[in-house]
Structure formats: C-alpha cells, structure tokens
Image (cartoon, rainbow, N blue to C red; front, side, top):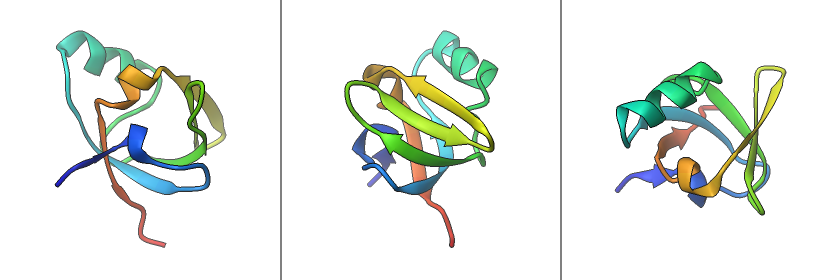
Length: 75
C-alpha cells in the first residue's frame, strides 16, 4: 500500500519514493526539487501542503501532493 504526501501530518519526516501523474506534473515537481530520494519535513497540510526540503520551504497544492508517493525517513 503506497502512502502519499497528502496523507502526512505536520511534523512528519518522509522521503520521496516516486512521483505519479503526467510527465508535466513530474517535471514541475522536479523543477522545485521534489525528486525521488529527497527528504522532506512536513510543516502543514492545510490549506496547502507545506514542506521543507533542505533549507527551502515549498507550498504544494493538495492535488499535486497526492501524486507524491513517500516512505518514512529512517531516523
């Protein structure tokens, strides 16, 4: 069973496993640094999903976040 970024809660640390959706969506996420293997810290989930990647804070629309398949970060 896969889990998406949309299913996370504030404070979760996760790693991007894969990105589903159209090539355009994958390209859009890649252009802002959301790629497989990148660790994210979820800051908030509503009204948009806000994540921190390294020292960059990104706001991602909820429908886009539903295409980001994640795994739990190890420690």
